[in-house]
Length: 157
Image 1 (cartoon, one colour):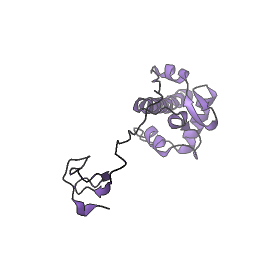
Image 2 (image 1 turned 45 degrees about the vertical axis):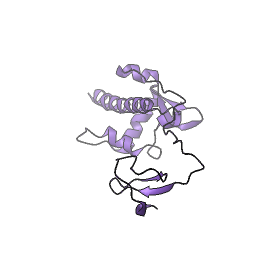
Image 3 (image 1 turned 90 degrees about the vertical axis):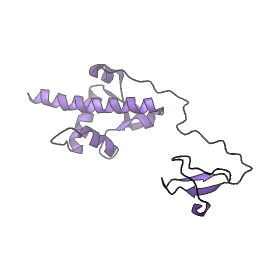
Image 4 (image 1 turned 135 degrees about the vertical axis):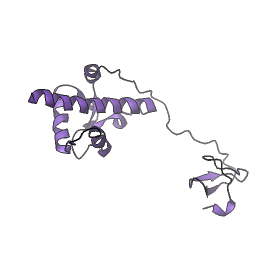
């Protein structure tokens, strides 16, 4: 009974790690350091701990999660990132144990597309009065790029 209970929350942790990997890979992250998770309390992302404990009535302590991560490494579900042994990626064995398909990250995708601003024109940083986002605008631009509200020159920073 104890072994079965232990394996269920280890599988829950593994499922969260694999889902996180797939979500980041689908968004265009392709560097192993961005997709990896830390396995110690010091290297673990706090959002990962929150995700693991989201649906649990009795949340797991970070040290319990760390112990489970050690078990996952020992059983071959996690492998170290080349060049950074403190971060780990889920292995194909982890995805097959959960019945999930591993999304392959697409390399060469830029998360931020640079704006084609002519370098010979002068732009101002203006804060929008509606959405409060500060962005650089050319003198002929009169509307916010984010919400479409009219821009006022007085709000230039």
